[in-house]
Length: 153
Image (tube, rainbow, N blue to C red; front, side, top):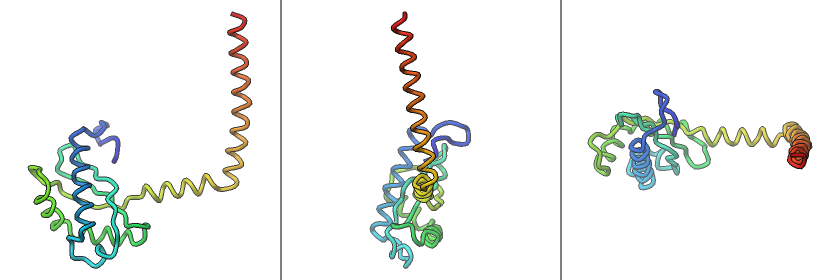
C-alpha cells in the first residue's frame, strides 16, 4: 500500500483495517471461484494489497496471477466483473458503503526481479565489491582515529 496519500499523510488505522478486510474477502472470492469467468477460473490469483482512499469510498486492489503470466487478461477480466464483486463484498462484509473498486496489476514482483537482475550483473557486482573494500578500509581508518582520540583524552 502506498505509505503516503495525496495529502502527504500516511494511511490511517481505519484505512489499513478496511484495506485488509477487503483484501481477505477478495482473496476468498477468487479462491472459491465465485465468479463465472474462464480467465479467472483458470488462474490462481493473489490479492497482494488493497489501498483505500481516506474517505473509504474508493479502493484499488492489486492482483497478480500465480507466476505472473496472463496478468493483463486477469486484470481485464476482474474489471469486467466489478459490479458483481461489489455485490458479493456487500453480502460478506459489515461496512456502511462498499468502496468503488478498481483492479491493478501488482508490479512489485517485477520491480524486485529487475533489481535482483541488476544487482547480480557481474559488472555491478564487481563495482559493489570494490566499493565495499574501499569503505571497510576507510572505516578502519576512522575507527582507529577515533580510538586514538579517546586514548589521548
